[in-house]
Length: 154
Image 1 (tube, rainbow, N blue to C red):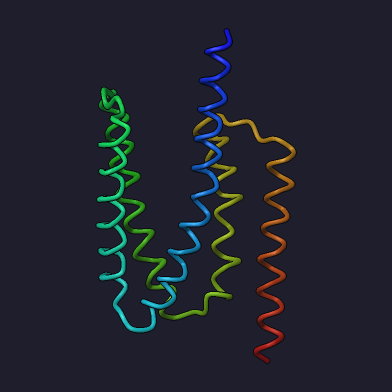
Image 2: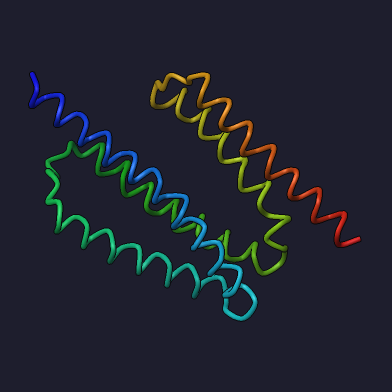
């Protein structure tokens, strides 16, 4: 029983670490998109982002050696996510060419409620009070920043 608890704790620790890394790297992506959006085409930004992301993912896969014996439906699902993510990256790069980052931030945070809906409908997730409270705080802070930036630019 103790070894199961230790493994569960290590699993939770890895999940927390990945969860903390995600917004950090997301913020880096937005900074680079803002810089690249001023001078590079959206297509080249998306190609660079997706290519480097693919290489990093392959390196991670070689390191952790995941079991890839999936059903064909899961492969179709994962490939679909890859194509949709590439399209999303292109649109994000294009949006940074025509709008300021402060104007785009509140729109980006719409992914939180959309994530709720898709998680509930497709993945049968259970939404907790802490998740809702944290999401409300994040969304409200984004709209506050948007409102403040608009006042400062007037």
